[in-house]
Length: 158
Image (tube, rainbow, N blue to C red; front, side, top):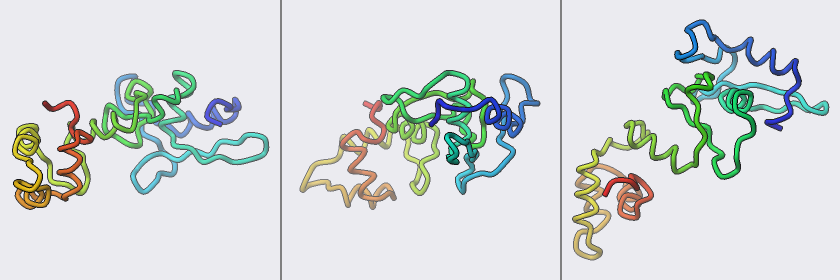
């Protein structure tokens, strides 16, 4: 559906985006938003309505179809309602998770530093220094420690 916009949909979409700040500024979505702040746009195709994220629509209108290997459209500006294609990049779910960790936006967890991540990995020893012990010490969930140890979080930190 993301590649089948009518000219009417395209015109209606851009009327809901504030581009007054210029080409390098954030272009906020002016209409309805999700609870997390992402713009919500309804497009129509073959008599059916489709609810889409506005940032994904902006990306497709600017760059073409979203590649299946990079299905997540990320904001380089960390501003969910932004629809400026210059602020949008395609990537994987892991890329998006890495962005959140690097930028300190991992909701619900204490922000860990790269040094703390290195320390967790260096100190973890099954049955000696355990996941629960490290989780208590660093004030995060045991699952967070496990993901750090298994390089699912902070994978680029050596």
